[in-house]
Length: 453
Ligand code: PMP
Image 1 (cartoon, helix red, strand yellow):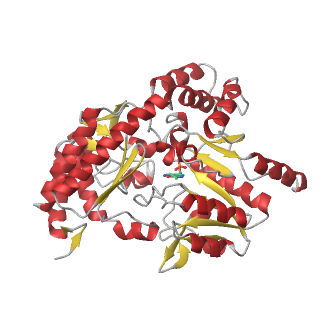
Image 2 (spheres, helix red, strand yellow):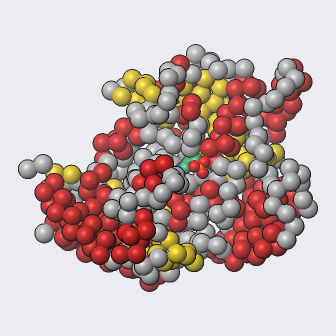
Image 3 (tube, protein in one colour):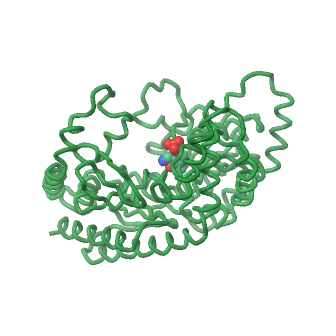
């Protein structure tokens, strides 16, 4: 019989139906309000991703505190999605809420610096090790601007991405490998350009392919997460990062490390923990505790090259920056995060509970003899409904079990636990409790048992 992740499709369908009914029954108010979408919004939601959750309709949030979400029907969820990382340090961390209150009395945006900037520059340099920073509003924007600088200084048109990557709404990264050939990522709306003209793509962990792709000398920059976290989870093999850095240097190609998700590793991200040496560094999502903000930094050498480029650049708009970027609310919130939230103590708590979660899930998988596996990068844990480890994005695509995963996600919600949609990501925040972790482990075990019954 047909299966997904080793579970029969019939079994998955029956569990999915039963769990959908149970979800609805617990949410009469939400269903009346949002069951058919909301008037005035395209497709009934303010952002179309909200329709992509596997639940019959979106969970309508009344409030979120620490790592708990309460919906308008009064259901409480232990939140392991945490806004898909935007609230990775918990919902409204106290120091951030305080900074927001302080700044609210002083104006929210003025296209000018405030005194918080004086501390912020020092904090960013000390924390991430690069000497020059800019503030933007989303990780997507930060990546776009950083890539522009890379093309400017190298005077090269192309970038290189790894198959399975995600760096936000950055057009030039929307490329995939299909049977070994580069193609535009399937599904892109309104994209008429052939993005493969200026974007090369190879598999993660494939240094010979990288070497070959950079040999022409036309690639400005390699952009990558240190661990691929957007196609399940793919860890770098031993020596991969050393090879990546050596090969990019050899071919005059810059290296952009996007830490937006791998900041789960530690207060300085994966870069600091493993001594990576990027030319450009991007961090978005949680860096201001949920206030939209991102940062991008560059090395001293790159800044010198960019200065030189600017002297020869035609005068005019750089194509970078946005009006609301680097506003005083971002400064205040980001300062609070760097000073009081992204602390060693908080990360120690996150690391410990993430280890507990990974082990609990692994035990369940073994107990139910499922051919699945668990991966982890610091506070970020992923279960994958296929054997592992995965070597690259191509493998990861093959490991995706969307129907099965959707059934599991809804079943988890019905047991009081929320994990990220699209794949199986779970984040531990500084305010996540052991009790919440054990609840997730127990719920997962319960569902695994039902799946194999
Ligand atoms: N970089 C990475 C690694 C991401 O995972 C994401 C979002 N998932 C982004 C960039 C884009 O972030 P945003 O949607 O906040 O712009």
